[in-house]
Length: 538
Image (tube, rainbow, N blue to C red; front, side):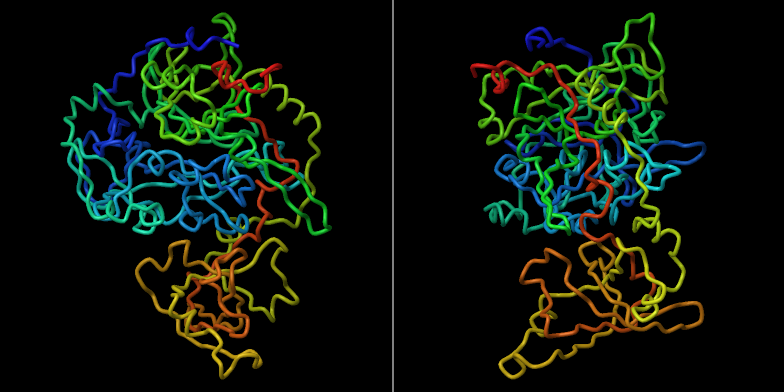
């Protein structure tokens, strides 16, 4: 183990002249970090963007879905303050109760239900980054990285240089946490000057996403500008959680119980002698893949070109705290990602994950048996391939079924009033199933993922080149009681346009749920002795 005191090297975190977004202390007292723009922003402008050829391309960060947390006490602070409802990110069908870990702006920026100035894209992109279940292209990396990516933020109000970025958690988020009086207004310090932000802040747009050059690794992080040796490439604030909180217990259809681990495990830093995980939550750092440490004479393109070190101002003061204290209190616990050598714009960023990770991965590759699930088709593939094609009704699916892992879902703004009106009354309680019929109507926000419910396609009508469906809305597994449609009522919606119908994956069927998916934390040898609770005699 390397002593923490030997790793507190001051490094330059000077903000580059062309940096547009920084992390710095929030203008809200006691609110921790905040995100600030260094340039003027216009409404509808992406918060993060990069130039490709002759145009600008918006980009965003990963989303890591956490289904059915078994030990929430080990991630109490994480759950309480940082995680998102998966219905906001399109991940609600990953399990019965799903929350989303959304690094970057979603976790760094503070929330203001009244004065928010950025909004996310409707939902992240989804794809397998080339790792599929088909035998011809089966990969040992399948299920080891999230398929949810490019969760992008857009400016909703014009912003001046120096403005803090605020996102909309919603009034419910504050009220659930006892902050009713906190919702309408925040007492803030004055807007910091751009000069002060450059002096005190860390640049957040030094990295961009892309497909990794490493086979089976999925996506990677790439330098957006040149970095000299010793420069801080990215801040790495971390959330301490217990390893036990990442355990999962699943029951299969044959009755077997299988213990697995949450996908988030692969994105957190750990130590073999500690029950603690440190989960980073700043922009793009989760995309950094493994590269072996080498000496200068054997450096290759895929050798580690960055290392982690503790921040001299946001690390040492927490080393003597117990793990329970770390998980219960607000901290600014932070590492820094530092360039080991000069890095050029466009270079992929690599970090040495440590010998235990390397051994675990090599063993996984050796024991890997290619999957032979030729009938499996993920929902995002069908949504791309059949985006403008007519969909099969339930009657047609009897002879031409969709893949077993797929069901159809519909965008419909089902209100609590609709559900209450459909509840059985004293006059029809116990009677055979009846119907309630409503027509589909477009409304603001109807295509947000929280309005996506399972639906059965009963009928299809063709109108010129358009297709409209009569559907029956169903309950999503895990739907809260107050949001459930009663079984005694068939809620029918007519005139549903094709664009309001999507394919969705049945719960526990996506790649991250595969029993053979690789799981191993990133190795970090910077843990102070106080946190090594698995040592003999401790």
